[in-house]
Amino acid sequence: MTQPALDLVIAALETIREKTDRAPRASTTVLARLQGARAAAARPLALRTAHATPKAFGAVESAVPSGDPGSRNKAELLAVVRDRVRACTKCAHLACSRTQTVFGVGNPDADLMFVGEAPGVDEDQQGEPFVGRAGQLLTRILKAMNFAREDVYIANILKCRPDTSPGTFGNRPPTPTEMQTCRPYLVEQIEIIQPTVLVALGAVAVEGLLGMRATMRELRGRWHTCNGIPLMITYHPAYLLRNQAPSEKRKVWEDMLQVLERLERPISDRQRNYFL
Ligand code: SF4
Image: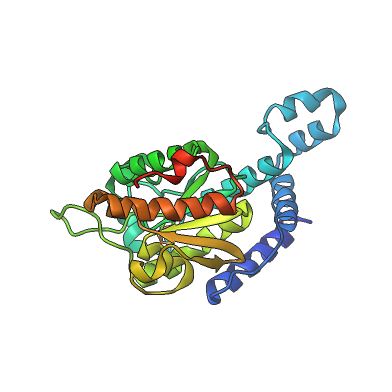
């Protein structure tokens, strides 16, 4: 496909995505082909020729990330979305106030994907989600589940830190409009990664993912579905920092035990009895 034709297809898909609640659906294979065609069209002629020349193959191959082909494709697809997010100014006020966008981090081929609400001040400065105190607690929860942080994928509904008035401290939750505007990027991340299980951390993440508003007491601990993927809802780690009662930690842990069961991961007696 030529570059102008490809640009037309991508522009049409982006228009559909922005005008409807549901993102246009395409399989990962089709997306990979589209992105591959765009990359090939954009590649300088010399490089394209080198690809076709056996002697020069090694030089071109070394520029391609290693790893299994499936996750390499996913990493490349995510990189394309990351570039679009980096340049995004759809929320002009956030584009002005952010230090940088915070796209997401982790294994592009993860079975387990966590979704939070929006970057806070630490995330805005470091460009990575969940790096503050709440993020450190999430890393500890993952460790208790026998996951390293690099095993899973972590992202937020919003890719820019919600702005706050000058002189004020802390973070503010994203508005429904901000979430609606940014959500398509998250949907793309989910469709590329195709995790076996999604976990929504907190009521704002639930509202962004499912458009549902309810108390966490009503929402958490039960399975929902998002884009055809099982979704577990649990408290945001920041809630556990505010409320350190063992009973609340146990609730989150019970939700994570359900996640482990859904992933068919082994669960030890010690894990079953955590916080009891
Ligand atoms: S929050 Fe999302 S949609 Fe809004 S400017 Fe940032 S990246 Fe773009």
